[in-house]
Structure formats: C-alpha cells, structure tokens
Length: 315
Ligand SMILES: Nc1nc2c(ncn2[C@@H]2O[C@H](COP(=O)(O)OP(=O)(O)OP(=O)(O)O)[C@@H](O)[C@H]2O)c(=O)[nH]1
Ligand SMILES: [Mg+2]
Image (cartoon, rainbow, N blue to C red; front, top):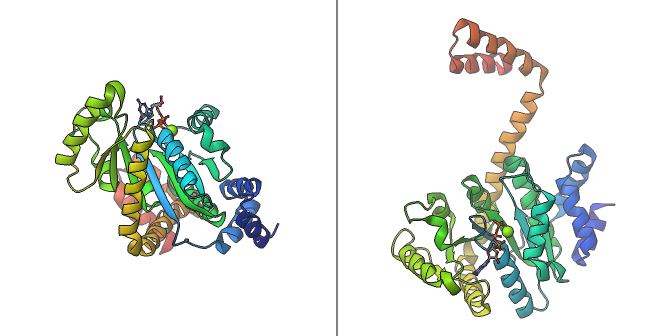
C-alpha cells in the first residue's frame, strides 16, 4: 500500500482505511513505523478550515455525553461535514471496559456515517502518545473531518498535552468536582478557552448555577463561563454557538499556534528519543554502572557523576 493509495482512500472517507491508518501510526513495529512515517509526511500539516477542540474535565463530568450531543448537532447542521473523536485516557491503560463505556456514552454518534471515534492508545503518555494523537488528528483531517474533538481527563499533565493538540479547549466542571474554587486546579484554568459547568438540570441545577457564578466572578474572570446540560439540546446549541464565536476570534492566529504546537511536540519527542536511545547504548550503559558504583560507594555527588559521565560520553 503506497502513501498515495492511503491518501486517496482517506479522502473518500473510507472508514475501514481510516481505522487501518490509525492502527498503523500507533504500531511500534519498525516496519510499520517506516510506513506510518511515509504516510504522515504526505498528509497536510494542518487544514486551516478545520477546528480541533479539546473537551477536558474531571472523570464523570459529562465529556463523552457532551461530545455525543454536540457532535450530533454539528453534523445535523452541516450535512456535508464529518467529525473525528479521539479519546485519550492518560491515567490507566485503556481497558476494553473503558472503550465500551465510551462507545455506550457516544452510542448514536459512534453509528453515525460521518463520525469517526477512536480511543487513543495510552501507556506512554508523553512522547509517543502525543505524537500519535497529533498524527491521528491529521488523519481525521485528511479524511475530511472539519471538527476533531479530543476527550481527555483533566489530571495535571494531560492539560498540557491537550493544549499542544487543539485550537480551543473546553473545560467541563460539575458542581461537586471542585468542592471550592480554591480547590480547582490552576492548570485547568490556564488552558481553558471556555468553562462549562455541566449538569445544570434537575436536582443539580441550583448547585451548578451557584458554581458558575462563583467561577464567573472569581477565578475565571476573563474566561467565558456557561451553564450546560448535555441533556438539553438548547443548552448544547448555546455552547456550539460560543465555540463558533471563539473560532472566529482566534482564526487569524490558528496557523501560528499550530506551528508552535508542532515545535513543542518535536521537543518532547526529541527528549523521549534521546532517553530511549541512550538507554540502549552499550557505552552509556557501561558508564552508568561505573558511576552508580562511584555514587554508592565513594560518595560521589550525583550531579558531579552526571557531569563526568557526559564528559566521557561526548567529550
Ligand atoms: N444530570 C446530568 N447528568 C449528566 C449530564 N451529562 C452527563 N451526565 C451523566 O454523567 C455521567 C458521566 O457522563 P460521561 O459523559 O460518561 O462523563 P465523562 O466525563 O465522559 O466520564 P469519563 O470519560 O469516565 O471521565 C453519566 O451517567 C451521564 O449520564 C448532564 O448534563 N446532566
Ligand atoms: Mg468519557
């Protein structure tokens, strides 16, 4: 299969080929990696008219429910458009269970002919996965997706990964998730373009309203705060309109931001590459054993040992 064949099949929106291409870029077999690299190099780096949206928030905040509702509304409004969904689970190896859970939360969307849903591989969260995630987005875009939605659980480091992947980050909160404003992770606010307080319905409506107004007047004074219920179509539509508004505001900066993202990914990729290659270099392994010994038994300072080791390795 040549890269040109892949690209033609992707352009036609061939689901099976898209799934195979996604599997190819995730593969760690050296042969597949070479093929994946040849394919990815021929993909457009970015499609200016596409939008990459991160949906992040604590476990159970309603991220998948939002993607289902928002995705369906978007596809209904634009009968020619397609969307891609990538769900990244940084904390635990993706069990069959959570893939199934995601599919059941996005039941209708996962059957929609113009939607592609993919759970991203977890494990090596930094380095490998972030590259794969970016390449997966490029594949979705090559398959004609105007929107790619990336679901991640907000747990510290994942916020920064998502910031390097998407154009806009929607952060979901639920009244019970924060306990107090002070308890809200600063990291979350740093990456948010839009905060949505979900489950603003039924018994949780009042708590959501209180929380949203605290957020709007407190921590997040310059980030738009919306009340949301993924169960109410009007509420989801309001969020969609807000996304269009932010998209228009940020359009002029999008290409520049994506270039910055690519160089940040290169840096993290390079770090992972250096560590991995050093770890397998016989000279490095031998030197390390020697210096471990000196640190352990002769009281050599670890920093001094690093300096001496690198001196011998590269000097
Ligand atoms: N009342 C109410 N419940 C909601 C709403 N949105 C989602 N839920 C419920 O919240 C629970 C979690 O929803 P998910 O969409 O799976 O949440 P998630 O953030 O994707 O969860 P993880 O992927 O496991 O982190 C489910 O029981 C949903 O039915 C909402 O707007 N209102
Ligand atoms: Mg989910």
